[in-house]
Length: 177
Ligand code: PRP
Image 1 (cartoon, rainbow, N blue to C red):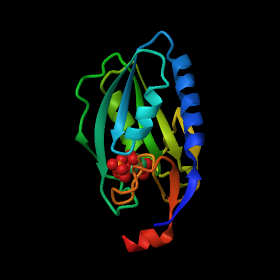
Image 2: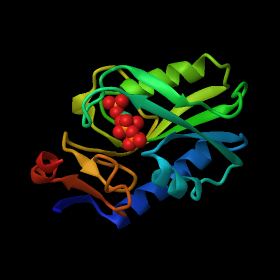
Image 3: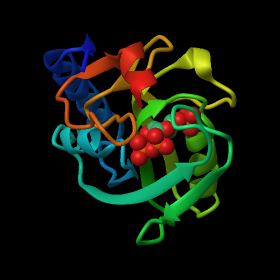
Image 4: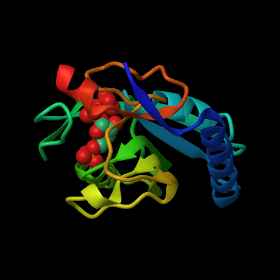
């Protein structure tokens, strides 16, 4: 196994704290609903929510897209929807990475049809060079180059999510899978 570390634990921790502070300022006086996109967002969301100082609740969706294991196909499906309605709520979607943008573009529009007070996006990572549809994070951790990254919730073939840092997966590892 060979990883090329890209974002160290400490750098992630610092950035997540900054994001939490900014979100707390922006939503002051409001109540926030964090919507995590499983599975990738679970670690980021767990750390982020502990840096948020306004009243906050959580819900999760499971979304999948079809295609090769390393690329979205464009067909997005909600496998597990929110447990409750979001009418009148301030929703912040929490995502690990924006790649083509297809997942978030679909989900954001879908949630907007349900009558929320607002829908914004908080993503840990963004690969802007890969974008196929226009979607932007309102809160972003790091913009990165087009490399296959794993760790801190992100997987390759369901593995590597447990790494406490973000690493670039080697081409060897790719090929062996
Ligand atoms: C990844 C990631 C995003 C999506 C981003 O999820 O967590 O949800 O792909 O890609 P896009 O911008 O091209 O749509 P994945 O389908 O790998 O599932 P996972 O979260 O369970 O790892």
